Length: 245
Image 1: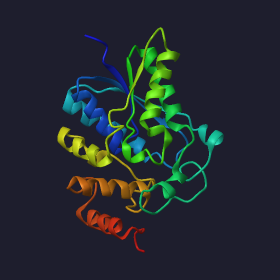
Image 2 (image 1 turned 180 degrees about the vertical axis):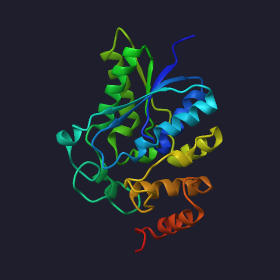
Image 3 (image 1 turned 135 degrees about the vertical axis):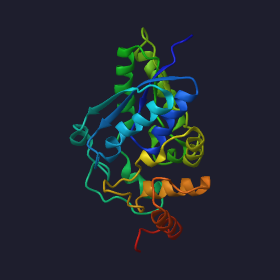
Image 4 (image 1 turned 45 degrees about the vertical axis):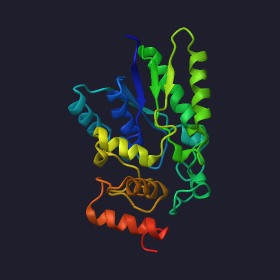
């Protein structure tokens, strides 16, 4: 049997968590996860990773090795926008113009390159990340052509110890991911998708609104929210404005 061992880039968010479950169910062997502290606004997603991996172990009978890599120097190298810079987070619907401020220069290329180095060292054939089609218009490093080019780059850079890039959701929408996750048992309640790092999701930033929209399109409420929060979330989504406006 060919080497189907995978190192998954795991943020602790909905997309990468569902990817973890999907890969294992599809016959890949998720050997490890790699996550990055890259100088982002908060580490709330990263804090939830141990619980996610506990849930993974309970369902699949094994717990992947987990690494959180500190590359927070990236904030000094490439501080810009709202995620690593001083600009305000957009509190509007998820679209191209409002979300461009959340771009982190070359982020996925950096993550994938570091993950590939780890995969080669450990003898794994694949690195996986959870790019999806909702992000194509905003983030260049989530597009199919980037995936294809990066896959080829990893092959060329590691010719004697080949490693390939998996992006199982690159042509799927976030609502598709929600549907898949519900079917295969992703513990959505353990994931975090908010740009803010508070105790509860803000329900008004772009990534919150995108998540709300995806669950609404999929036809069921987000289990990470209380019933009151879900009601407020849908109101925010329908109004197209921030909470309280």
